[in-house]
Length: 283
Image (tube, rainbow, N blue to C red):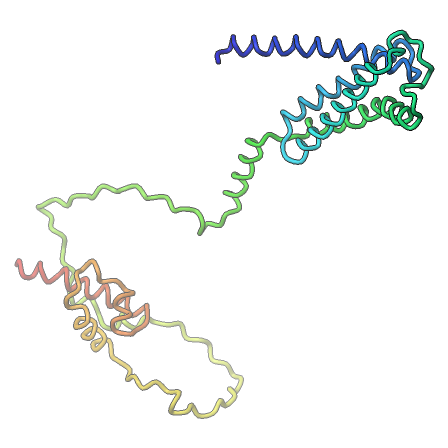
């Protein structure tokens, strides 16, 4: 439906609602007069009942969740109350001529008391429920804004490990000029001494050390201590059929069962040998 059709439909709805309000206004005014309201109060009484129905309808369209259900209950209650008072107005002809006794809406006393209580309590209820509905509408946060704020807070509170790592931009490889081939790394520069990096020596304490007792033979390691050359030979044998790309410190560490620091040194030594070997063969 285009905009003109929607506008025409809304205009027709307003006309129908206005005419229905005029019919209900006549009945509610006569009921208010019968319950002791003066001319001004009787004229305003229909706006108190039917006006709150319109307010509750608007609140129902705006609110969500429990607040929306509350506005629906208010709308249903005041609709039923207006229907009952209009029904009583049709049953009591004296209300039309204003000759009914003051405070008399029915011949049966219990029914009359209930109808008078209903008619006189609707203005008070309009003050309470109308104020509550307006407050709910003013404090209502649209669902889109709430979801956007919750998504932002969730993204901020997430740990770094939960966030996806951004894919690094591809770096264009730098071509090496043909006239300047890469210089081979001399094998003699890879010294076995590097397998055992220097460690800081703790300061000696003058305090006598308590005796811990003799270490049992079962707790002692049965693996002999390997020299750097033995480790390098063992790594060469274990990785003989490995491509250069698979020479990683972790793989070498698992293959020769050594520490991570020694595995890194072995990796550099093996890569240097693999890189130097093709250059020497070409020479």
